[in-house]
Each structure stands twice: as structure tokens, then as C-alpha cells.
Image 1 (tube, helix red, strand yellow):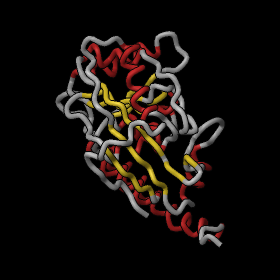
Image 2 (cartoon, one colour):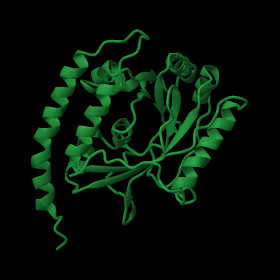
Image 3 (tube, helix red, strand yellow):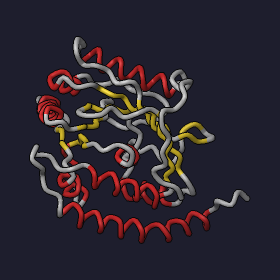
Length: 265
């Protein structure tokens, strides 16, 4: 017996579901009180605390190495699960870019809009161009924005090609690009419960995660890349290479600049 059978998972779910529900209700109240500031953007600070508590409730333990860049910055990360958003938000204040469909989701769409999320129309002729304009405006106003330039989630073992068009926003705003390498380490490589891929649905996936004893996540903030003198293709290729180097083990030799726990079961 490994002490983590069906009864243990059920018990954890029964404890955590009410806590998650209460936390979402608290988020609704906070979101309703959020209003844009002088620069036209909603504060990202409430999302930090809300994400930290959510990770704690779900038993997510995050270890962070490297240091987030200060000021306006375009964060880019590999994408494994919807959980990525809250793991990153829990340690680094930022706004997000999401697919346009999210804005129409019941409750979650409203919460995303209230939190200042930017949206992109996938499949449209000018979807990426419109998103780049939104990102440029936010960055020029001192904002910090995270995008997942793979364009989809993966199993977490490899990094797909980065679509370069969104990197144009950093060039136009004259701000750095900082790559974030995400890993969910497990004895089998990547934690099997975490990837949100294929035809996965949100609620069944959340139900599975709530049964896990603990989920480890590591976030590595790579060296910021100056956008000056670089093309968007060069920025995309360099940022992808940084993340791929971390995931393959090439970028793990340096000692951590900081370590933080987002949540712990």
C-alpha cells in the first residue's frame, strides 16, 4: 500500500472542493471591486494573493529560481496546463493573454475580463495582430504581460515552436522579453495529472487534480532578453532555446537566485 489509494484521493477531494468553491466566491467579490487605474489597467496585485491561496488549497508547492524582471516586461512561458497561469501569477504580478473563447465562458470569462486579461481571436486573419496591439499598449503603459507563444498546451516534455508575431509587441514597446521555464517534476518525468491536452475538459481535470496529495512545480526565470536590435523571429527562437535548455537539464547548473513556496498541502 502506498497510502494514496482511492479512499485517500476521495478524502482530499471532499476537503478541497468546499474550499475551492469558497475561494472562487471570494474572487468574484474582489473582481467586482476592481477598476482600471490611471494608466487604464486593472491592478494585478489581487490576482497574486488569490492565486497563492488557490495553489495552497490544491496542494501545489512551487519552487522559483531566477528573478522576475522589473518594470514593463513581456513574459513568455511553455504551456502545460491551465494551472500554469495561477502558478506564475502566485509569484509574479502580471496580466495574461488568453484565447477569445475564454471571455465567453460562464463566470471564468467574467473573472478573466475583470482581472484585465487580453484576448486573442485564434484562426482569424488578424487575430495575432490585434493581440500584439493590445500587448504593445499595455507594455508601453508599464504593464507586465504573460503569453504562451506555443499557441497550445503540451505534455510538458518538449517545447514547441514559438510563434514570433506576439514578440513584436516587445520591440515596439522597447521592453525586455523574459522566458519562464515551467516543469511539474514527477518520478515518471512530468506529473501525469497536470497536462491539459487534447479533448480534456476543465471540471474533470480539476477533479483529478484535487485528488493529488501534492503537485510540485518549478519555475525558472531566465535571463531577460533585450528587444533592441533583435527581430521578433530572433526573440522567439532565443526565448524558446532558453526554456528548452532548462527542460533538457542544460540550464539547471546555476544556483537559484530566490526560492519561494506558492502553496503547500
